[in-house]
Image 1 (cartoon, rainbow, N blue to C red):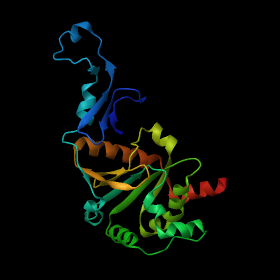
Image 2: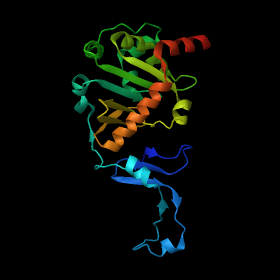
Image 3: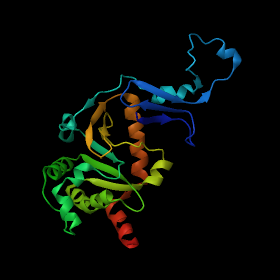
Image 4: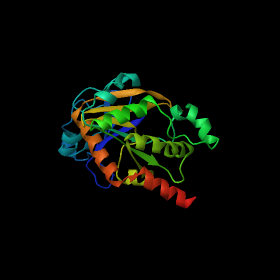
Length: 245
């Protein structure tokens, strides 16, 4: 089962840290093992397989979930949020490719060298409508060096989204790891509702976990602020890529 980083109070990224064990309602705690004999003798009902770690209270007050683990929902369950949000819809993209892109009719045309920007779509129409109303559509995409094929496709199609009103930026994976950003995709609506994606090994979207848990939302807001600050706008990033070809 995969682990999802929830949060850490360590600046160097060693410990202590909280993780969610995906597919369960359990939390994995990383910290210094308890070795004080006076403490160990006071522990009760200890199984041979159990151990104990120390973590600061601040880690739990900041990041420990306050609600039960959300259930996986189809992506269509959040479709209404893309028009009903009040001020900001923000996306973090972390994968090296998406099955939905590879299945798109634009994929083959792009591989054939055709331009793929400027084509009308319901998605772009909605972006234009929401941004015209003063709302913000934003996303940060993690990119590798060199760019994967999927990342090249997204960079080629990004100008159409930007023209419609979406702010798309790019951040290297190395920077993201240094910033301790999450290693999963999510949408964050109005700094209040978090929709975290689940994918299979073939980059197919399985659904989303939707939550308003304060700890999860806070972690997403912190990731957004760090990513947005360091990421490079699409036009500037495209120029950098072109200069290295």
